[in-house]
Image (cartoon, rainbow, N blue to C red; front, side, top):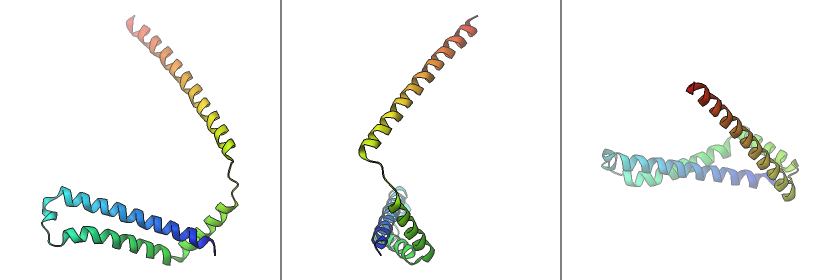
Length: 124
């Protein structure tokens, strides 16, 4: 099953995100609250708990049958997608940027116009 490698890579990436976020959260609590720093074993716990949370998240995702079926179907569908070429992406991006600039200029013109009208009406 070729999809399995992609799914496992995704699960590993998710476990790494869980590890990183929990590590940063524990670090924040450790640095912000002096009472927490005084607890015995807290220094080791703030390094070990994020690893445990990441591993538990990975194992839960790995053992969840419905999630694995969903991920397999999602990867299969993504393989069917026809991705645009670089030239098509550049062309579409250019069109979007030009449209945004034109819309921005039109809105700036209306803003300037209505600002002058309101200023004129408030002066009289």
